Amino acid sequence: MTLRVLSHMVMVLGLLLVAFPLYLAFVASTHTAEAIVQAPMPLWPGTNLLETYKIALFGGGTGAGSTAPAARMLWVSLVTALVITFGKIAISLLSAFAIVYFRFPLKGFFFWAIFVTLMLPVEVRIMPTYKVVSDLGMLNTYAGLTVPLIASATATFLFRQFFLTVPDELVEAARVDGAGPMRFFKDILLPLSKTSIAALFVIQFIYGWNQYLWPLLATTSEDMYPVVIGIKRMIAGGDAANDWNVVMATALLAMLPPAIVVVLMQKWFVKGLVDTEK
Amino acid sequence: MEKRVLFQSAWLPWLLLAPQMAVIGVFFFWPAGQAMLQSFQLQDTFGMSTEWVGMDNFKALFSDSAYFESFKITAWFSFLVAALGIAISLVLAVFADRIVRGAMLYKTFLIVPYAVAPAVAGVLWLFMFSPTLGIVAYGLRRLGVEWDYLLNSSHAMTLIVMAAVWNQISYNFLFFLAGLQSIPKSLIEAAAIDGAGPWRRFWSIQVPLLSPTTFFLLVINIVHAFFSTFGIVDATTQGGPGQDTMILVYKVYNDGFKNGDLGGSAAQSVILMAIVVALTVIQFRYIEKKVQY
Image 1: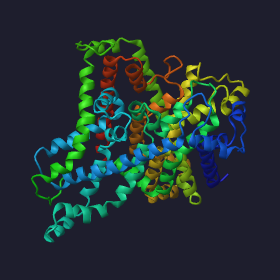
Image 2: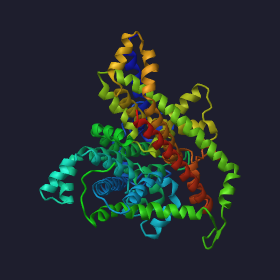
Image 3: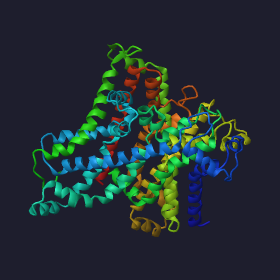
């Protein structure tokens, strides 16, 4: 067989491998809980779609685990993801600007301080960070969910890399025109950075939306759960009587916004990934 | 690496840096310092008194067979996730590189797992492989395999490896594809003219030229397997059966939050920090070398 046919076959196989769990989740969300619990579950969509999603979004399920309505959790996830994304981008733009375009004492120290945070993902400091957030009274708040995650070395370095490629002539021209640094930043640098910002937007939105360990620690009240935590909480120990159709519906709702962002902004996403490698 | 033309200001750079510095000061360095401090202390169960015990927590960890087990499990887990993730994505990328029609469609589908949170990926795979109602578990039982990840540790490890690899396919695939597409077509054509078939071209041209990408992905996959898979473990096995999928990062959480062993958990955190530093140094050292060719 020709190489071209083989290539397509491999790709289709890969696609099936990737899509199967998602397809199954979708099918499960269109049946009633009873239909799924008897193995083997049906492989074709059922007729219970509206009912299942209604329960998933607005509560009222009878599962053994948490039955928090997904609508509220989706909102928490959305706010958290957007605050983290915009916050990170804003803070990193400012820091990168300072590091690239100014000379000031201790600049090297600050640069290395930011670099070191690359090596301190939240997973290596969970207990003490929890204590700090708790002492500051930030548990179960949007601030607690977002601020500890809002400083990003990767974003700062990405912008720094980019700013270094901006021609010096632009700065000279701005100076000649009498513009100060912030004018330069706003009117010249920011518009030039649009692609990097778009790329980072995708990556950080997904990062913020998919946060698990930190929200697990920082929230104890159901109405502040992001949806990713909510799903796990719905599954009561092993195989107890969970409403699997509702769980799967919630899972699909949980992955929809990041998937939409990634697919719609595919071009910038790929660029962002490849750029952060350098 | 500095710009020729700089702005002059006595106070502006400080103001610009202030937000990032404030956040990392309060939420990174202060807690990291606390973790290091706590790793040298022993607290009583109510947190009323703390005692300085020097290296005792570390010594206890190194002579604890459970900790050693966790290390082995994590190493094995990262190896499997990295090796399988890289191999599968490489195959997909190589074939995707050759396709002109439909490339966009395949790429779009293959990107979706990246958007799925590890915890959700865990839930999806748990649903498929649940011993009582999972459809794949049912299929396996029909084939005679007594699948039960709640009781069998290799089944449990298989489950978390599959979920983690599925989650990482997109990332690896995109990097490999970018790497392949940056290989000059002239090189491949020259080899074809010399009579090298596609298999030969793959091994003598594409694989060597992809080695920086492969190395980079290896480090990234290992770091990911060490840290970002917490959600997968929490959603599926919670470190079980027994302690057989207790990867290091899950153990820190388990010992600290569930068992209240603050000193031990802090010591484990410090060790994890050392591992991240080592991996990051390796990554940067190697990337620096790469830039020279």
